[in-house]
Image (cartoon, rainbow, N blue to C red; front, top):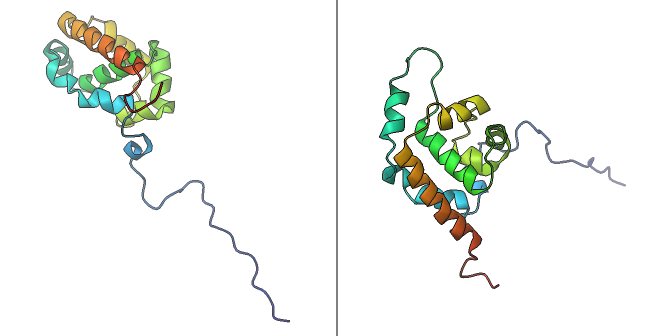
Length: 150
């Protein structure tokens, strides 16, 4: 009787699941709400100069700050999905794939988020525009897609 080769198994290396890292954008469906938000081109419509100018005028020494446009989109997205607490937004940036994709895998801490949204208050015109878009997004999020049956 011939000797059999021992059973072989797939390589197991939990620290490396793929040869090249996949793009996190591939993990979300193309119709995900986060992409809808990005496709609206809100940053072009919002009057963010009152937010950007003070942020750019800060002392350039020390650790680089987060892009105010990214923080604006993060706040808009998390508000739309019902996350309003700074600490919960920070946690979402670590745990929620949509937030990780939206921020480019950057994780602002809760104090940075809190400071950005309220100390001093961001531009009132931009906030009014954000509130308007947030109401629109909530309505769209509650409305079933046309291709889905009720």
